[in-house]
Image (cartoon, rainbow, N blue to C red; front, top):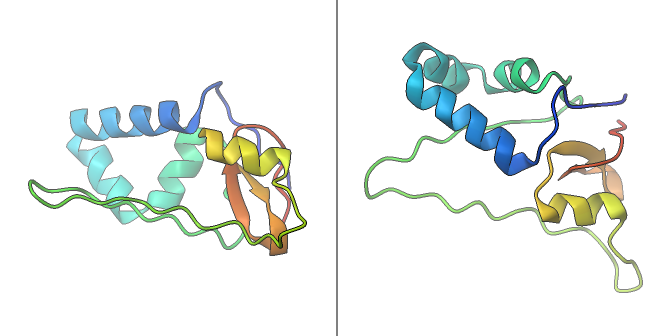
Length: 112
């Protein structure tokens, strides 16, 4: 399955767009909190990979979240793929990484 974004930009750009829209539109925010995967697909113009889970957390005053990305499953002889390097750089495609795990990246093709 190929996933192509409907617009150019990085993951940060996409997340900024979603956050801004949620701050401006309470109905959109509530839909995002209830159905994040559906909103992601609609707003990104892409079909999420089978089995992908998406969680939206709303920070409150004095309650912050830090997202710790999944550690790549590589043995010592392996190097990161171009897709994995792009993921670290902050893109927002979904690609198959080592061991069939999905990794976010800004270029490439997602396969399941």
